[in-house]
Length: 144
Image (cartoon, rainbow, N blue to C red; front, side):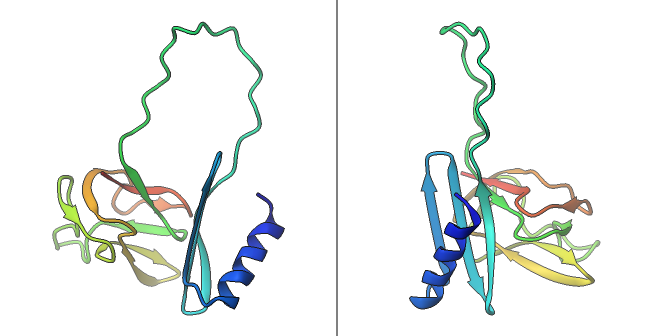
């Protein structure tokens, strides 16, 4: 998927007044969100170039994929699991969360941005480290 195709999707979102778009094809997982006239790509996994063939036998088992869906960082900034240093975290492993629930804060340019859950489920892992920088698309939580 190239930039022209993504721009066309954004134009269609504007034309049809959509605030969310999700496309999942073989090797591509694209999520677009629009809020306050800003379109954010929540996750765009482009297919990697084919690796050179190795001499693998058919009885090898591939590494297990981590169970669950990742909630990813919608921006670059510093990840905070709680609203303040002396407060408990928004969510813990094993907690059930609902779509739209505040799950963490990402500080970007001295602005504290509340991050909402994109999906409902049970938190199976907290991937990001409290107080550490995160990049756009980095996994924050794993939800089952």
